[in-house]
Amino acid sequence: MRLESSAFNGGQPIPERYTCDGEDVSPPLQISDVPKGCKSLAMFVDDPDAPVGTFDHWIVWNLHPKTNDLAEGVSLPHEGENGFGTVGWRGPCPPRGSPHRYFFRLYALDTMLPLREGSNREEVEEAMEGHILEKAELMGTYRRK
Image (cartoon, rainbow, N blue to C red; front, side, top):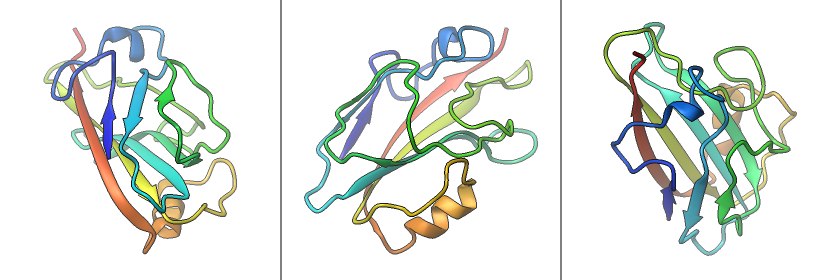
């Protein structure tokens, strides 16, 4: 399985447009090579370099397994509570200084997740347990000026 973005390459800076310093919309993402038997996709976007520990920017589940593209700024039906205390995408917004890494982790699951809108990361991870078929990862960086 592969996860890519037309806005940035893996290991490269995430454009300002997708951060708190810009439009704060989610970047476009492309998904390919989803394994057979996949019933849904789930994704976490987080910053492990945050001063408070890993900080969630986007939690998504029950994406259709035939999803190839997530358009820029897309709003999805099954989104969880991020580290800002809101539901949906909130882009990189690190303290000024060193760059932070942002991991987009996509999971192919053998089930749909019976979760309520706004579920938190722990609830999503618990529901995913034992159902992960495959994982793909994309990492971008961001440094505030």
